[in-house]
Picture (tube, rainbow, N blue to C red):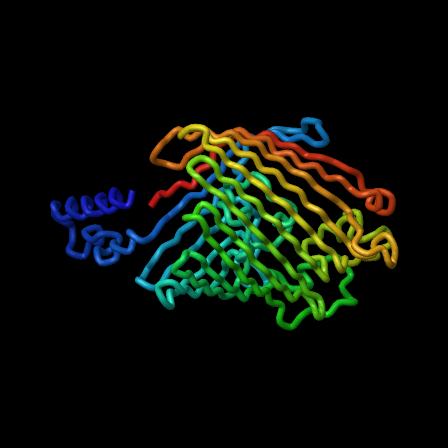
Length: 398
């Protein structure tokens, strides 16, 4: 594609000089991109990350509606503009976006950062970037995830700050990031809730450490991380993600374990359950943000290439939500909800030289509440389903 575009540019240049220009100042006689800049294109990729589907929805086993859906479209531009300077930009067009009051960039922008190679194996990144959580669910291209597990689905995964990554000769790499802990102000993050008993942090930062390991000639990989968030004064969040991946010629098997212990309920799931999705009651009293909560997720995905044109995939996931002393003053960590998900998928890959895949999939999620959640907070079990037929394509257009 890059050679074709370059050839077209050169042909346009030759064609213009073969004609008599109307004036010597006619800008058409010059290429749009100067020749001395065209070499930059060889190190730049432009990608249309696309997923389009026909979705059929079910609630508690009852069919509700069908619709064509632009599930994902993320424009990505990345590459080197200098021997030691790299950039990456990815913007999501299928999400309603607003300007972040802390980082001053739209929420729909996943990444907009510049990387500088301090050495051939050490890079410093600055800007908005993906938090290096660890795990393979988040590490995959978002167009390949038909449904995220609960923890990632409720997290701020793209934050502004700086990061440094160093790769060792044996293939292992270590990274560290210092990021804003959120994209909004403290008041906007917990809007509608009574936060009068909380004091916002003066330096709300997230510190993320990551290790990516490789073993057995790359067949087995690890992606582990630990993160510390300062959310409010004396209120922190500790987040651990352990990702493991095995891959051979036909089978790819991934398993993630994630655990988040939050002094202040950043994900908001327990807060929503305790308030039973009602932020303000009939008397105008605001709900409280839950404290001392925990979330634990397990995620596994297997992909098996049956033939060069057929791939089978199965994703299984569970998520547990806990709150401290919800049943009584000394009840400890009480389980409120466990969710289960399963996503069987069949993909058809018609072309050898381009990554375009047609798929048929079922996305099922079951939400089971504990007796505490049912009796004290009036919550009921429910399930959702979606049959999706569509196309997935990370189209490299340049």
